[in-house]
Length: 294
Image 1 (spheres, rainbow, N blue to C red):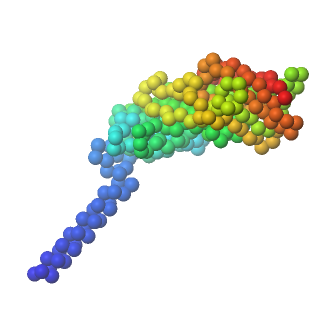
Image 2 (cartoon, one colour):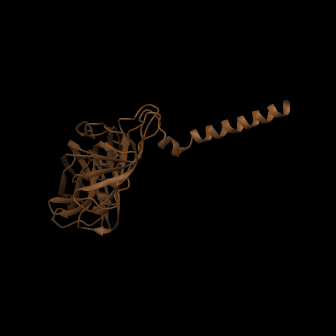
Image 3 (spheres, rainbow, N blue to C red):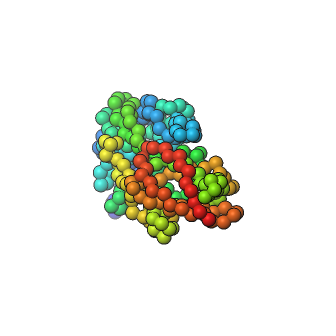
């Protein structure tokens, strides 16, 4: 009798362990949600014009998605202190508008935040659910700025669901940063080749420039923005180009209002510096030529 009871206890213990392990698996967290949501293949039709791919047209930047572009989704309707469903969506075509698809834990009426380029939200701590918007590591080229630094935000609403699929609409995408193209000239109006560029607040490099911002998502895109004149991180925003160029350095910046900027450019001939007063609005493109002195 004791032997049979012991075997029964062992079997029950093993079954309980298997059940615990299954309940903790990542797949089941996404397919057996206690809030009634389930993983569905979501399609967001015609996500509107943005700046995923940029073309320099002198005073403007032409914009289009590129097939295969990745964006991050975060389900705002299901977000709680213990629940956060997020993942990746992918562009279907290279057009001014494109469908985005991916597996999303959702149900009818859910509001889903949409951020390009793909940026995983902060998972723990007081900023849980926010996105880190970073300016660090820019290469100064148009392609790099378009692919990694021209952040845009929108919200899609799930409008229909089946057991395994869902569709959603997204009527607005909002650019969060400023796009700039800087050229430099000396006192004689000669172009200054750029090998490295550093940008700071104020009249020298000591004030530094803000590098990151923790962006809080919201169901209303108009409530989502990067504030003007963020506090400096203490380090200048720096660029190191592969080769010297006079064709212009493409730079993504946080919005600025009435701020003095200090520029330092180096090339084989030495270092050139100067300042400019700037008011730069998110979503705008600013081609500018700045005079520097050696």
